[in-house]
Each structure stands twice: as structure tokens, then as C-alpha cells.
Length: 190
Ligand code: ADP
Image (cartoon, rainbow, N blue to C red; front, top):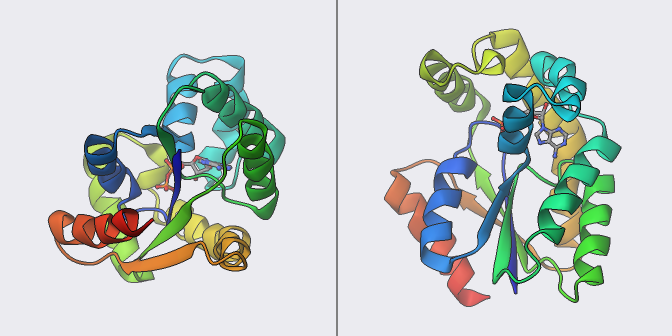
């Protein structure tokens, strides 16, 4: 299996690149943000639990997120591999992911971080907010809080996988095709 952690701040283009990677490498794409939005859209108990955190730009508690992720991975044990998008966002989530993958006889192959600076991110997310209907994309304070949370709680995950030589970074500025080329170069070297 090839298991990629697609990493980077909110608005860095993970979702866009994940769809292209799925086409080329036939991996199962798991976006915890998309899963939460699906649950909120259906007003499920899980969606109701997640809603207030997402509205503020805070992380949903680890036990909720990890449980949801585990169900999704276990439903696709025959996959060629996974692209994790928006997960893990804390060290605890990374440890849970490692344990889960070990349990099915595999592991994280690589983490690739898309590098985009803060001001570009704020502009991109506001633009997306104009058409996405995502309330967390329409309020600048919430956007800036998400960037802060990313720096404080999520960037340690990059260092965590760097310890085993699995972390890579690519420039996340450029055309969609250019950025995809940078990701594919790393994927093809795994
Ligand atoms: P973005 O990358 O633009 O911030 P996502 O769609 O990945 O958007 O996530 C939207 C929101 O869902 C996050 O701000 C957070 O509240 C919640 N969320 C998504 N993934 C996780 C996770 N792994 N752990 C905790 N909360 C998460």
C-alpha cells in the first residue's frame, strides 16, 4: 500500500491536489473536513458534535475525529492505499493513525506539505468562501484562528514524521498542474 499524508495549512490546495492524485494513483481519498461536512449536512449526532468546533475554527476533539477516521479506513481494507487529507492534525492523531495502519499491516509512506504563506491563504479561503457556502470560510477571524491552530497544534506532525525521514515539502504556489508535478515527483520516488 502507498499511504500519503497530504499536509499543509487550510486553503493550501490539499483537496484540489488530492483529486488529481486519486486519478493517477488510484488511492482512496479520506478528507476529515469533507466527512465532517457530510455528517453536518445530514445533521447526524457526529455532525452535531463537530459543528461548534468547526464554526469557531477549532479542532474537533481527537477521540471523535480518530473514531470517524478508523471507521473509514476499516471500510476500505482492500484499497491500494490512502490519501489522508486534513488528518492527522495533532500528534495524538498521528500516533493513532500509525497504530491503525500497523494493525492492517501497513504504514505511512510519506507526508508531503504544501507550502503557502499566510496572506495568500487568507485571500484564497475568502475567495473560496464566496462560492463554497462554508461559514468557516467567510469570516476572517475564523480563518485566522484556523491558521493559528495549524501552527500550534498541527505543524508538530511534520516534525513527527520527519524523525523517520518521511516528511517532504513542496512549494504550494503556482498552477495546479505545476504543483501536481512536484507532488508526483515525490510519489514516483517512493
Ligand atoms: P481546511 O483545510 O480548509 O481548514 P478542512 O475541510 O480540512 O478545511 O477542515 C474544516 C474543519 O473541520 C477544521 O477547521 C476543523 O474544525 C475540522 N477538522 C477537519 N479535520 C480535522 C482533524 N483531523 N482533527 C480535528 N478537526 C478537524
